[in-house]
Image (cartoon, rainbow over all chains, first blue to last red; front, side, top):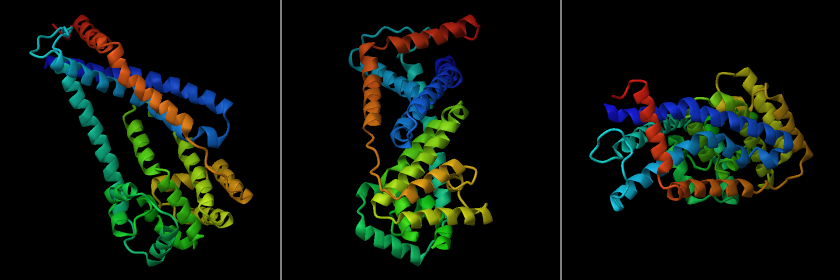
Length: 181
Length: 162
């Protein structure tokens, strides 16, 4: 049970202190950027995405890399002295538990997002000849990478059924696409 | 109009908005203080629409047709508010009038501009990844040890750990 202390403490520290503080700093930074770079084209794209993801990604990625490095150095060199107060056979047991919990949480959230996308695509109109003919016409003019096709097939049942160049949400909204033509 | 709309959505797909959108969703789900970043997230989502409009023009979409399709879609959405997905609803919401005006203004201006290269952001991403990868090597694992030790000492002082 004591092995759970460090993983749970770290998660509490991350979610309760570190990530909120980083989010606050990020908000201040974004506010500064908005004042000094008012153009949509230069700011509100990848740079903004970077700042939005930073508060979550930075501490999590650092911890994951550090744990991997710790485990690797233990396996290869076996020279690192344990600083843990608990008595383990392997001193990085706590870190391994933390890594497992973090991977589990990420997996749960990723599955949730995937299921959301799948749910959206499952209620899409299955067959729309007019839309498909237009898509075919566009495909003749514009090429799309094979990787993107694979992504679509994974993302949505409808995308796999149909011609397959447009994201599921769009096909979901094919009802209004038909309305506006 | 349909061609213009499809080219707009194709631009979303071509820009990898599926992936970035999923990454952003994941990041915000894991962030307990995501509400702090909500206004900026909304701006990012809206700006993607603007970028997709511009890309659609560069693919050969008719700007006036695209503008008309946006107006028609908003009208249709007002009549059928429950039939749209949340994201689509958000992007076409009449409450986002400033963005909608900006989008229509850009389209009416009808000068297809090439989307800006994302080089600065790529540099930021690469630098961050490099720092994160090298940090454990440079500082050994002292930082992680300090964190580990600190948490356990804190727990011990609170009487959780014997």
